[in-house]
Length: 635
Image 1 (cartoon, one colour):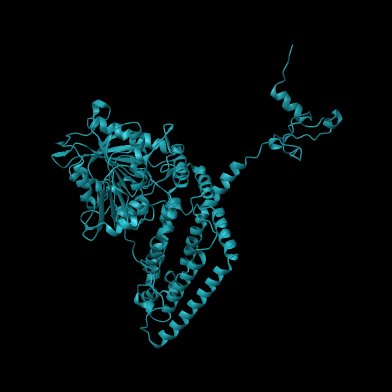
Image 2 (tube, rainbow, N blue to C red; image 1 turned 135 degrees about the vertical axis):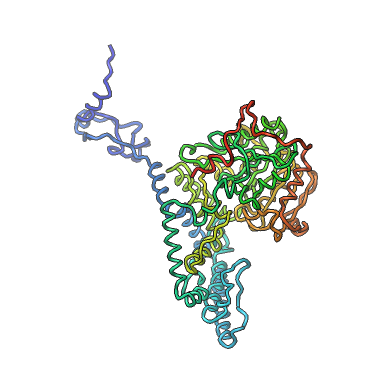
């Protein structure tokens, strides 16, 4: 009879000194050992006496989980580094320093430039002492508003400003065009150097800013008192998790996101809103808007004069909008394909049931546009003709020139971000906000600090600023796939992105495309958006609007000062590069919104009576409650 020993008896025997498998504590792999965790594949024979003298341990051995330790350490570090990998910065500056140290010609250029700039400053100092109206030796860069005040033309503040601007040029010269530095590091180093230099800008400090000193004299120092109050209020709001001051003036459902509508579908990832018609007839093809889940959907339904949704409804369209859920730890394993299936495809199923199977004008904004392009390519691959047109608002499909947002997209940074997200299951709002603010630190960080803490100005909040303060999160898996497969690998543009096990290609899309870029977009630069001309074989209408990533998209028709450029390219037309395009495309006054609605209407088949009710209860889509719904209100 064969007998076996119970685990308890084995453990007891081990505790009394019996033989047991070696552990890392007993035997670390030596020159002839190749086992994992110190195990020896072919241990040498030992005598019974030797085995009897082996040390006994009275505690169970727990193997070290190095990956778990790394996750925890990096997640803790990221709270102090704005989620930027220290290794990425160290490698970038090491690359720069080593190549600069081995480039004597570049060193000579930098030294020569430093001497010439010092000479210019000395000459300007002497001339300005004799003639206060003498012209400056250097002008700020276009868009730099820090030295507009007339006080910067007086001594000694003129010397502060001129010295800083000359130093800014010298730092740029010292950190760019270093032969041998990798392309990625060649962009990181000047960006980080500029961030550090801006900290010491004379405009950011009260004793070197003539405007602040003048205000302190006239207000008897009360600007600093008000600034201290603003700072205290900001700290208390941050600790309590309350929104920015003035945001309470814009209540969701009353002041913003107020276009009447109903929720007609809901799943674990999104709610689908159907808006009520305001015209007797509507276009036969409805409009579906897919916003990015990096933002709350109501950026497209702000105040009535800034609401793209209201503009479409008033223009005679049946409008549907996806309202994404703000993910928590429970959605950490939802990836890009989950957003496609439970977002775009689920919405199209509901719209097909409500509107009788009509094709849809689909519109995607930012990351929502990238997702829409994926879904459209997958449907085109499978011969599903559900889309009448595709509109991409500030949305990229090729990420090789994705602007300064790509500065820290490399293997080191992505691994670090994954560890940061691993702890809680998502990328949190402050981590995203810090990255975007760094891209425009002068406008979004330093100018605000000067206004509120040095000048003591009352914070001014607009509907866009209130929306911006209503942050969202990104699921762990989705953001990891987005960074690795799109930003780092560029799989979508190069035909390696798989949907349902098979690759998709943007060239399969046959629905006409309307693409919008904005001139000052730091998130999706317009030349990157323009690449849809290279990636599609269908007709493309391209619009270049003024302003930035958000302000250029929500520039409503009531703004008479805005302009845009628009051209239409047929499917068989030849390619025009972006520099030639912007030089030849005619400039039009006003908002691009009416041009878009006209474009949509020309590609609609007919008119029909406006639907009298919301949803379609008989097909499983009854009204579930009034817009804006539940998900947009979740913190």
